[in-house]
Image (cartoon, rainbow, N blue to C red; front, side):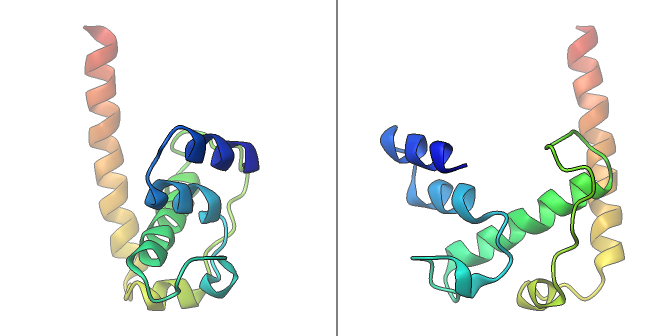
Length: 108
């Protein structure tokens, strides 16, 4: 991952993309160096951590993680997610639509 962060900085990707790439496996905002825990960037990182965990848990695609570790409760609290099951069901429905769309593209 260090290589990707170095490359992303070298090719001029935004600091937001660089921050997300660097910290999307760190659920503790206090450990994210140079990222204010109260910032919008920190919230985006939390969202990517959550999204990554959900799609891995639903076995959509493969990111190299056999058994994703659930984010801590503090992440759900920061994002004000109190009904995780509802969020997962909504993501699942969107993934079905994405699979259908990809199937249409494959058959074209």
